[in-house]
Image (cartoon, rainbow, N blue to C red; front, top):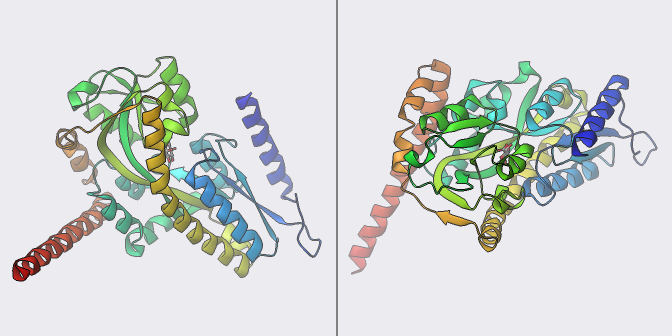
Length: 356
Ligand code: GCU
């Protein structure tokens, strides 16, 4: 049923793009509105979907209905890699893509996807908000037909399993763990001794249920929004990745629209980013509470042994000069934050000593 729905959506898109129209509604002057199709893989409860509703409202209002934003959640227009391909051709205008999807196009995204590259949430958010680091990355895929518009928080990824509790990398030995179709994720799980099993997000629940896989790795929302917690009851905070999803836009779209319409898309993206970041934390806490209520156990292993297994992967990637340049910028920011926090801590201590 789901598959049939998906295929017909693709046929619909192909037909629409062939004739170059999208006229489901009209603006105040009776002209057909330009339809802006936005696809993503989350359900309607997810903060990314809610943020995109804000995007839709903003863009439609700012353009007086000249643009008609239509949202397609739940991988309705195809699993994420496929939706990204449709965004390249312009059949979809915007898509939420994971770093795993994007690394097929650009090495800098691969670096952002490296396990344990971020020290903390503070580090990760500062990197993502740093124009100097992210600006060139957003632009880097223009020749592939799309660019980055903004980012959404996608939390911290951790491993979870149906049977065996994971406390050390050794516990992962031989386990079939679902990963996204991403070479970095495959290498990461291999380095941890597991047997990485790439599959699309929509297939993970059935994969867990039918024991095709022994586990997966994702943020807490997957336990609830995608019901993985019904089957996988052991969630271990090994914290291997803090990473965003990217809101991607077809490279030609912003040039094809009027300057006012493009500006509405850009500003709508900023608004969606702020909304999603605000909503993320509460969603994460709520998902964890709900997962606990459905019997998921949370474990807090020592992350150091997991981290140590990634040294070779970091070394391998930094052999590539382009990747090394991005890697160094991210690490420099991490060190800067560490020094800043140490200074703060020291001055707090010295003022406490003076006060005593
Ligand atoms: C998260 C993430 C998605 C990704 C998915 C997956 O939900 O936000 O971008 O596609 O995990 O593991 O496939």
